[in-house]
Amino acid sequence: MQLTSPAFKTNAHRAMADAGLQKALGTAKGAFLQRRAAAVAALPEFEALRDIGRDIKNHTLANLDFYLEAFAAKVEAAGGVVHWCSTADEARATVLAICQDAGARTVTKGKSMISEELGINDHLEANGIAPIETDLGEYILQLRHEHPSHIIAPAFHLNREDWEADFRRAHTDLPADRVFAERRDILSEARTRLRAKFLAADVGITGANFLIAETGSSVIVTNEGNGDLTQTLPRVHIALASIEKVVPTLEDATSLLRLLARSATGQDFSVYTTFSTGPKRAPDLDGPAAYHVVLIDNGRSNMMGTEFQEMLRCIRCAACMNHCPVYGAIGGHAYGWVYPGPMGSVLTPSLAGIEKTANLPNASTFCGKCEAVCPVKIPLPKMMRHWREREFERHLTPSSMRRGLGVWGWFAKRPGMYRMATRIGVGALRLLGRGKGAFTSLPLAGGWTEGRDLPVPEGGTFMARYKAKQKQGRGK
Ligand code: SF4
Image (cartoon, rainbow, N blue to C red; front, side, top):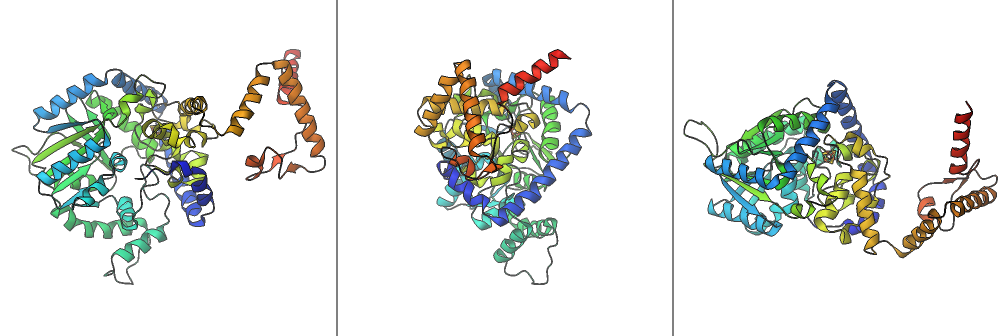
């Protein structure tokens, strides 16, 4: 997937003017928020579980080499093969080699963001192998030649009518009187059509929500059951996973699964939670003859030991983007790479470099909601602030902003001058805006007034009012 994050502002403007996108965002976002809130309210220990989730991930990251090696040893003991890949190129070459060794012509795929990060579909297609997405949202996007705009609901940016139109366009044999009143009607039709593909596929590729060091298992969660068919029907199963997906024990995975479903879709548990341990054994009725785990670093180990290490706790639930006012206004494609929303604004610069992605950590109001809902308590605003610091240090911020920050910094270090300057500024704005109520344009504040009005200040400065309030409080 091509990086278009440098065009974030243009993308965002386009997204805000797209009526269809705005309708889709409003519908989907509301549903996610309500369901999560209800699921959290119904579980009294949810807050305690968040602490447990954070601690499990912190402990694992602190001992990552140990748990990865333990996991790999268990996979191999169960008859599987582990491939260690430092870069995206290595991972793509590894997946292709496994498919070619299996003589694969078609490959079914479960939803996997790491597969998007690696560009697996394009690579397979370029080498004569047809990848078939089996998650309904991904299936529709494949028909549209688009990438996901959300990490758990790939077609978040589409309305039901779009789904239906694309589906009909791709399946011209559908009778015109076939009614699709709900998404689930399309799902059931897609299932029927995909069945033959599941049976014919030579290789199945899935992601992994977790890898369990204790047992050597990979875990995936889905609501459509497509992941199970992808990994059990073909002769070869490839599980793609980035290195931070490992957790120590089955019990740890279970604790995180309880957080994941509630935070993601507001379910107590996803409809299907599937554990895969090695290839098919003698008494098994189903399962692949060969089982491969492709472990991918692709920049994660560079985050270890830095102020961005905590980002590796992420369990990809999407709660942060579902609650983000910026994501809610522009959707996922505007972020210009695989991972949108607040988690993407931290992770994308870590993986793709701040030089190309400096817009992203600035795409935040710092309202703090992302951190407040994150099931593993990742301090996303703090990390976006760190990226802004690095952006400033590397002279990537526009010179006008640097000059502005320089002036602000000079005053901020001199509280007396700062108070006097803000008093003068507020007084001047009050004078200029007399009788107006709000400024619709203002020199040096065009970036603000282009999208919203700036109210004319009333009363004193914030500091003066804060001081008065404190005095009042002491007087009581
Ligand atoms: S950062 Fe937190 S809230 Fe966002 S996707 Fe990751 S785990 Fe979920």
